[in-house]
Length: 149
Ligand SMILES: [Zn+2]
Ligand SMILES: [Zn+2]
Image (cartoon, rainbow, N blue to C red; front, top):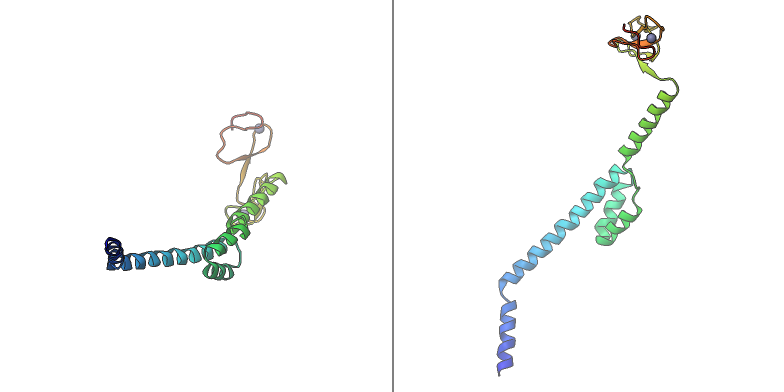
């Protein structure tokens, strides 16, 4: 019968060992992507200060579902960004409150309008010959009163 021959051909086609290797290949790829999901989640959670081992296990067990859960529930910001933003805010606050920097010689706190370091006597600023305001040592002209120095 023709149909039997046809079925036989199909069966023969699919019993070809190439299918077995292809299947192994696909399984291997799936395992690799699965493990990289776990690794990626662990690293990302660490950067965001989320419980990294917990999320790695969730993704390991639930695979795609775990990954989607993590993407929904993870903290929205990197911990480094938070630290950097805090620093930026503190810097702005300092600038607004009159500004204070450090003496380049001794490292102690010296306000921006100090002419000399009160601790080590290093010269920090010149005073303008005309208006007396504090000027950086390398300024050639006073930005307040426009007198040449
Ligand atoms: Zn000093
Ligand atoms: Zn001046």
